[in-house]
Length: 443
Image (cartoon, rainbow, N blue to C red):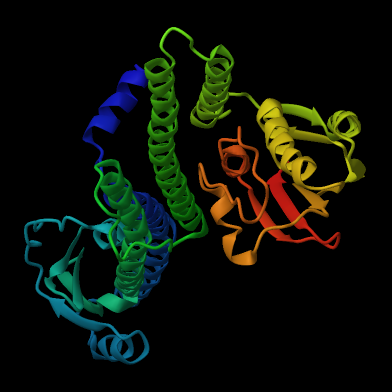
């Protein structure tokens, strides 16, 4: 039953965020003010009205007692004067006619109930009251022996008149709050709607709206920045995959052309060694292409020990005849995608081993970030060409003696892995005289 009830409420609730936000603001306000109004009406207003009605009835009872103490046929002018001067009551003595028939009671009859109860309690004689005829005056008639006492009293003497002021202030302040809340909510919802529009446009292949920028509350800004970063990563991956396909078609077409030439010119005597070399080149290229295209995005995060990884680098340096120094500041255990991050380090240090004699690797793990700096004494790369080496299939033959078997994907794969971890790679001049590569990722 409870589940069905909430399903029914959800069915009739507005579906848009702006309408729901207004309900979240308005509903508690209405509920709170309703409770306050009920408590005020039930306690304060009713109590004050009862006390005022009690005081007016006490004055009327005093006038009735004074009239009863006078002998029949006496002059009541002094009583009438005292009631007007001291009690603010206009008193008349009428002939002993029957009391008027009871009139219709007002819908909101707190005064009628309180005044009738007090007259019954204090005077205990037949009476008639009229609180409707004149909004500022209350008429009360009391049946006495041989006469009728008619009393006019001000409504404010028997009734709390400040209730409407309270209700007016309560409703007025609510309207002011709503006038402030509605534009504020609209301004807070607008960045979310713009973010949704930008995401929808990007999903349909259309350009992002030119006026889109992260704004609004901190959480909405973070969502907008995350969307922009996601869009840039996707666009960058599309560009890289397009360049990869172009490189694949070009390089493989070159090798296949060599196959045809060797078969056409060699006749029955085909150079098997050359063909095997071309096949090895093709396998190397295909492995590089597949590694770049596949990436390591499907790998789960885990722990990687930088100390063990640096030990393996030291063994590789010995095999290559290179000088390597390593250092670690902070905890050597990091949380990354181990195989992907290992490939990142292998690609960057592999380039350093290939072109330099001395390599220094330093890792600093502090405050949730890992910074790995690789310095070498190689030929380096000109500053204006450093971004180019991260593009797929780019080979800087003038800067370095590129391996002929290389595919130009090592640093492109490395940066792709670093950015998939939420970091990046930057190149700079090294104090050793060569190139410095700085890898910074959250870990």
